[in-house]
View 1 (cartoon, rainbow, N blue to C red):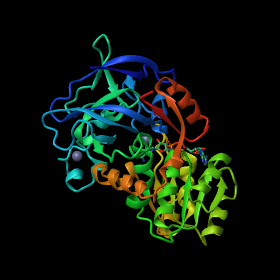
View 2 (tube, helix red, strand yellow):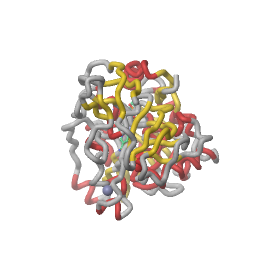
View 3 (spheres, rainbow, N blue to C red):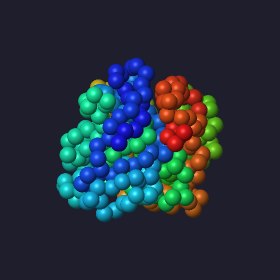
View 4 (tube, rainbow, N blue to C red):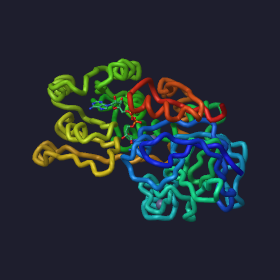
Length: 367
Ligand SMILES: NC(=O)c1ccc[n+]([C@@H]2O[C@H](COP(=O)([O-])OP(=O)(O)OC[C@H]3O[C@@H](n4cnc5c(N)ncnc54)[C@H](O)[C@@H]3O)[C@@H](O)[C@H]2O)c1
Ligand SMILES: [Zn+2]
Ligand SMILES: [Zn+2]
C-alpha cells in the first residue's frame, strides 16, 4: 500500500511530498489510516538539525487515526478502532517494562525510528528505506506501527484531541500527575507555555495546585496561560524573576517545570523552587546542550531535579484516563488547539512553531 507523506531529506530544508510504500501489517503490526497530527517542537528539533536523525525521514509523532488492518498476532485492536499513537512502543519484556515503567523501556526500537524487527516501516518509489520518526511518522496519510504503539480511544474523542494526547497532553499532564505527583494546594511554576507547557498548566488546574505561575516571552502565550488556570504571569526576560516567584509563593515554588529545552531556563529552574521543592525537566534541548547546577543550593535546601520522559506515562493506562478526563469536562483540551492545516502546509506549521505564532497546529490528514 502507498501513502502520501511529507519527507525530510536534509535538515534545514523544506519537506517534500512523496508517495511511500508501507510494509504489510504482519505479526503484531497495525496499519493506521491517520486522521490528525499535532506539530511538536520535537519534530522541529529534527527538521532544524538540532537532533541527529537518520534521513530521509517522515516526521510527526503526535498522531491519531483509525485502524485499517491488523497482523495475525494482534489481540488488542481490530479494524475500525480509533487510536491515539504512542511514540514509545514498549517492548514489554525489559526490566523497566516489567517494573511498570514503560516510558523508560530499553527494548524499544521507536527511538531508532524502526519497527521492532529492525526494518523501516516505509520505502520510497525506488525501494530505498525511509525512517518514520519515533516509529510513527504521522505527517502522512497512513502508518504501520507495532500494536504497542496504538491505543484505542473512544470514537467520540475528536481526532485533533486524540492526536494531542499522543504527545503534548500525556507529557504535560503526566509530568504533573506522575513525575511530580503534585497535590492540591501545592504551588507551581511553568517555564515555557507552548503545547507542552499549556498541558502542564491544565494538569496543575486539574489537581487544584495554586498559585500557578506561568512564564513565557510571548504576551499572547501568557494571556492564553491565564485562561488555562495560571494565577500569575511573568515574562521570561524579567531580571527579577526569582524574587517575584519567591514573593508569590512565600519563598519558592513546590514544583517548577521547564518546558522549553534551553540551557538558560534549565539553569534557572532550581532557583525558582523553595526548600524541599522539585525542578522537573520536561523540555528536551538540542544535542550537546549542557546546563550548570548550584550543588550547594540543591544539597542545603533539599531540592530535587527530576527528569521527565513522556510524562512518566504508560500509554495504554494513561491515554484512556486522559481521554476520559476530557470527555467528562475536567481537562478542557480543546483550548490547546490552534490552526488546522492540510498536510501540504507542514512547513508553514514549522514556521509558526519556530516563531511562536498561534497555538499548536493540527494537520488534518483527511483533507
Ligand atoms: N519530555 C518529553 O517527553 C517531551 C515530550 C514532548 C516535547 N518535549 C520537549 O518539550 C519542549 C517544548 O515543546 P513544545 O512543543 O511545547 O514547544 P513550543 O515551541 O510550542 O513552546 C515553547 C515555549 O517556550 C517559550 N520560550 C522560549 N524561550 C523562552 C524563555 N527564554 N523564557 C520563557 N519562555 C520561553 C516560547 O515562547 C514557547 O511558548 C521541547 O524541548 C520538546 O522537545 C519533551
Ligand atoms: Zn512531542
Ligand atoms: Zn521494555
